[in-house]
Length: 93
Image 1 (cartoon, rainbow, N blue to C red):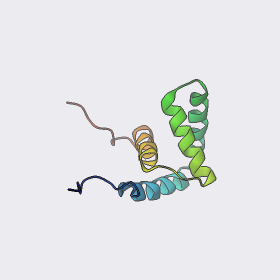
Image 2 (cartoon, rainbow, N blue to C red):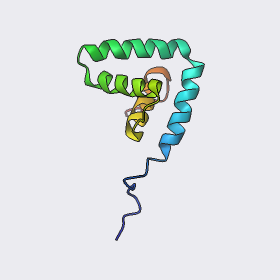
Image 3 (tube, helix red, strand yellow):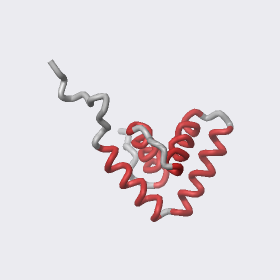
Image 4 (spheres, one colour):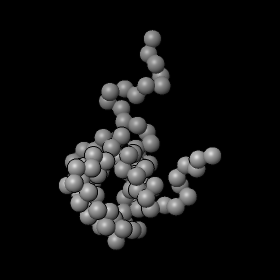
Protein backbone atom coordinates (compact mmCIF):
# COMPACT_ATOMS: atom_id res chain seq x y z
CA UNK A 1 0.00 0.00 0.00
CA UNK A 2 1.28 3.46 -0.93
CA UNK A 3 2.17 5.86 1.89
CA UNK A 4 0.38 9.13 1.01
CA UNK A 5 2.76 11.12 3.24
CA UNK A 6 5.79 10.37 1.04
CA UNK A 7 6.67 12.45 -1.97
CA UNK A 8 6.89 10.64 -5.26
CA UNK A 9 10.37 10.54 -6.86
CA UNK A 10 9.16 13.01 -9.50
CA UNK A 11 7.48 15.35 -6.96
CA UNK A 12 9.08 18.30 -5.22
CA UNK A 13 8.14 19.51 -1.78
CA UNK A 14 5.17 21.83 -2.12
CA UNK A 15 6.74 24.40 0.24
CA UNK A 16 9.59 24.83 -2.25
CA UNK A 17 7.30 26.87 -4.52
CA UNK A 18 6.67 29.33 -1.70
CA UNK A 19 10.37 29.30 -0.79
CA UNK A 20 11.37 30.27 -4.34
CA UNK A 21 8.86 33.13 -4.38
CA UNK A 22 10.07 34.28 -0.96
CA UNK A 23 13.72 34.09 -2.00
CA UNK A 24 13.19 36.14 -5.17
CA UNK A 25 11.24 38.79 -3.25
CA UNK A 26 13.85 38.91 -0.47
CA UNK A 27 16.66 39.14 -3.03
CA UNK A 28 15.05 42.10 -4.84
CA UNK A 29 14.20 43.92 -1.63
CA UNK A 30 17.66 43.37 -0.12
CA UNK A 31 20.17 43.72 -2.94
CA UNK A 32 22.96 44.93 -0.67
CA UNK A 33 22.40 42.16 1.87
CA UNK A 34 22.15 39.63 -0.97
CA UNK A 35 25.50 40.76 -2.38
CA UNK A 36 27.10 40.62 1.04
CA UNK A 37 25.62 37.17 1.64
CA UNK A 38 27.05 35.86 -1.63
CA UNK A 39 30.51 37.25 -0.84
CA UNK A 40 30.51 35.96 2.73
CA UNK A 41 29.28 32.51 1.74
CA UNK A 42 31.81 32.21 -1.11
CA UNK A 43 34.68 33.27 1.15
CA UNK A 44 33.65 30.93 3.95
CA UNK A 45 33.16 28.07 1.48
CA UNK A 46 36.78 28.46 0.37
CA UNK A 47 37.88 27.87 3.97
CA UNK A 48 36.22 24.45 3.91
CA UNK A 49 33.02 25.21 5.79
CA UNK A 50 30.55 22.59 4.58
CA UNK A 51 27.40 24.64 5.15
CA UNK A 52 28.90 27.54 3.20
CA UNK A 53 29.93 25.19 0.39
CA UNK A 54 26.37 23.90 0.02
CA UNK A 55 24.87 27.39 0.24
CA UNK A 56 27.38 28.71 -2.30
CA UNK A 57 26.57 25.94 -4.75
CA UNK A 58 22.85 26.58 -4.32
CA UNK A 59 23.25 30.32 -4.90
CA UNK A 60 25.39 29.70 -7.99
CA UNK A 61 22.82 27.32 -9.44
CA UNK A 62 20.07 29.88 -8.85
CA UNK A 63 22.13 32.65 -10.49
CA UNK A 64 22.93 30.54 -13.55
CA UNK A 65 19.40 29.17 -13.93
CA UNK A 66 20.34 25.57 -13.20
CA UNK A 67 17.96 23.22 -11.39
CA UNK A 68 17.97 23.39 -7.60
CA UNK A 69 16.68 20.60 -5.39
CA UNK A 70 13.78 21.46 -3.11
CA UNK A 71 15.76 20.64 0.02
CA UNK A 72 18.68 22.85 -1.05
CA UNK A 73 16.30 25.75 -1.74
CA UNK A 74 14.45 25.25 1.54
CA UNK A 75 17.79 25.08 3.38
CA UNK A 76 18.99 28.30 1.78
CA UNK A 77 15.78 30.14 2.68
CA UNK A 78 15.89 28.83 6.24
CA UNK A 79 19.50 30.00 6.58
CA UNK A 80 18.70 33.48 5.24
CA UNK A 81 15.72 33.80 7.58
CA UNK A 82 17.87 32.78 10.58
CA UNK A 83 20.58 35.31 9.70
CA UNK A 84 18.61 38.31 8.46
CA UNK A 85 15.12 38.18 9.95
CA UNK A 86 15.14 38.69 13.70
CA UNK A 87 12.46 36.89 15.63
CA UNK A 88 12.13 33.97 13.23
CA UNK A 89 14.54 31.72 15.13
CA UNK A 90 13.07 29.07 17.36
CA UNK A 91 13.18 30.07 20.99
CA UNK A 92 14.52 27.56 23.47
CA UNK A 93 12.92 27.21 26.90
